[in-house]
Amino acid sequence: MSISVKHATKVFDGQAALNDVSLQIPSGQVLGLLGPNGAGKTTLMRLISGYLPPTSGYIDVCGFDVDSDPIETKKRIGYLPENNPLPEEMYIREYLKFVGGLYHLDHVQDKVKNVMELVGLVPEAHKKIGQLSKGYRQRVGLAASIMHEPEVLILDEPTSGLDPNQLVEIRSLIRSIGEKRTVILSTHVMQEVEAMCDRVVLIRKGDLVADEATSTFTSRAGGLEKAFKDITS
Image (cartoon, rainbow, N blue to C red; front, side, top):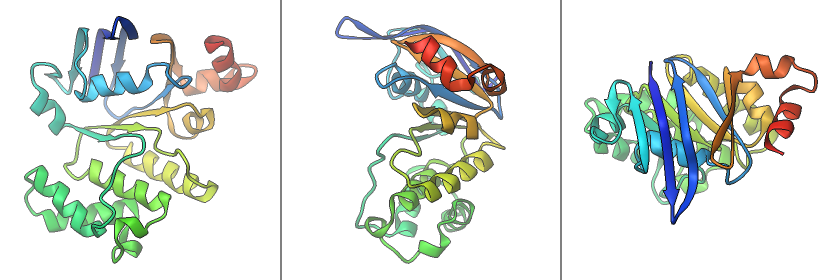
């Protein structure tokens, strides 16, 4: 089991953002976290990635306790936050080499070359990040998140603000990356889940309210959209 979440709760200023959530995610699965804005999706992802400690509960990533083994956990996780901040004055290759240095990677030049080829950045390699379209900026973020070859990839709203052509390209890229990793994808767009995810977890007001295979949702009358409205309304 790649990720195990047991009775995770997170409270901010007396308000529970996440309520007693339990979840098991096996290796090689692309899981979609679906819910309205403010439902608790980002909070859950930050707990799993170790950026926030749970108020109570236990989270294990690849055999390591997120709370007591934060360094080992982070070695195994790639995280792409929503509106990922990138240094606009750096060249793509320069930035990825910098990221590789943070992870103390060997053969950084080769790693940079490989991830740039994987995410389709080679045609833009001569540009600074600030010169890139939003779609290519997302590719830079994806490249940085997989530089250290993590077993788990966490993506928060990775297709937000992309045009239709960019959407198709990023969807395909995420599916390809997910063939060898566990991927958690947060979104409030049902089409994204249907296009990329093997399994759907619905979150409402901090509660996990549904957890099924994507095909199970889509096979019902009205599909995933109706299920989402019924469960979250």
